[in-house]
Length: 590
Image 1 (cartoon, rainbow, N blue to C red):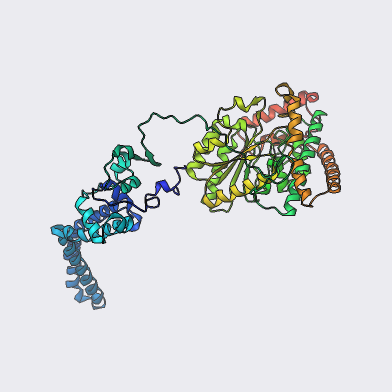
Image 2: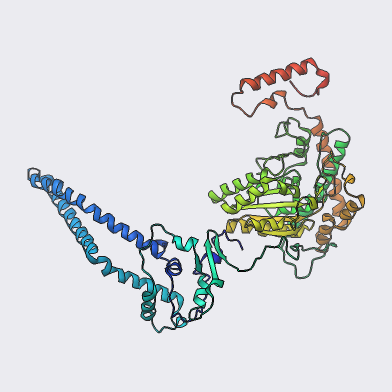
């Protein structure tokens, strides 16, 4: 139950009312009746009467000032206006109209003060009671007419003056009979304490006489949504979003492209041509299929293993190579580590190496889209290790409370560098953490491209239409090392890696499905791989030979006018490079 949302039926006593209550010979307390009736302007009856009384008092207090204006302004002006015939008619009409208004207001306030509340109060109360009778149902209450049920409620309902404020403090903080239980137990003599609830902020909380702790975990783990089995065959009665041949072929082509790009960049780093690299091998389906389910207007906040999202959106192989080599064509001007991509044009925020810091940023962006009424959402990716960061919990709570349209996509690949998930948390993975914050969640087979596409496509529509956050846990496996700085065989076996790479390979499964539809062939596979490899090697060659950014770019684009300490640092760097030129790359312009 998502108690924080207004569409929860438990927060609306009218929508969730028992339609067949039994007869009601015993009394109904004001704490149960007042908040269940919608008054004028969407207020409760209690607030409506309170505002009416305040209006009467205001009108009565205003009378002396009105008479003062009449006696000492309008009538003296009227007496002397004979000398000004051109404005006399206007003055006469104004004075008479103001006097009539003052007289009527005086009569109305006087009537109310000497008995008007007793005169008009019953009429208003009768309308209220008729409303109660209509909503509870005449026959189900055992009465033949609205007048009978009105008379019964009036005799048993205390009419204490309502307190100031729109919410009854007795109802908010005291134990009250649950409305459903009360209406269904009229005429019955049972222990009322077993049916009490606290109408606490956020929703009704039922009481229990038992000492009952919430279990640390459910008996069964949350199931994982999938569409294709391990052999790439459709599961019987599976539910998924239909994809066209064009989209399906592009999904597979981009998955192959991402795999080839990773292999070539990884080898380039091992050859000493790149300083660092991190692959997405084994997680291609999460990258490409999720990107295919989004629109270009959706804002992406990645971690560092989502280059496939950029690839889907049109980031070229040359642009990837420029960033990894940090040349002057790199949009980050060589300031970032390799694989820390970013593209303002493609709504892809630059990767930050610090774990999970992108999550609160994504929520803020999503709330901005909501305020601007944009037909878009924010999407952020993170690994299972990111859930151990405080930013993860802050972001989920922030998103739930603000009802921001943001998708949290967790790549649970089993390892946070060398830390297995068993050392990360004791909960049933990540998906159950969403419920704790009041966020709708789903667990998906991250190596099933069709399931990922369907889940993200549905989640996006839900997030935008209902203005709510969604958490998606994608179960996958990191086949490659964490990065080129890691040797994963030191903490996991080679047999385990090989089994996942063959038995649960996301490319093989999706290729089988598109081939079964007649959309792919061995010839198309061979042509694609040959073409992408040539393009990738050419992009690598061009990026490697392109000139590096000028040294001054290290100190620019932050301040409009650089402060003195930053200027001093630049001077010291240049002096050091001139003193020790052999220790610095010769291809960096000074």
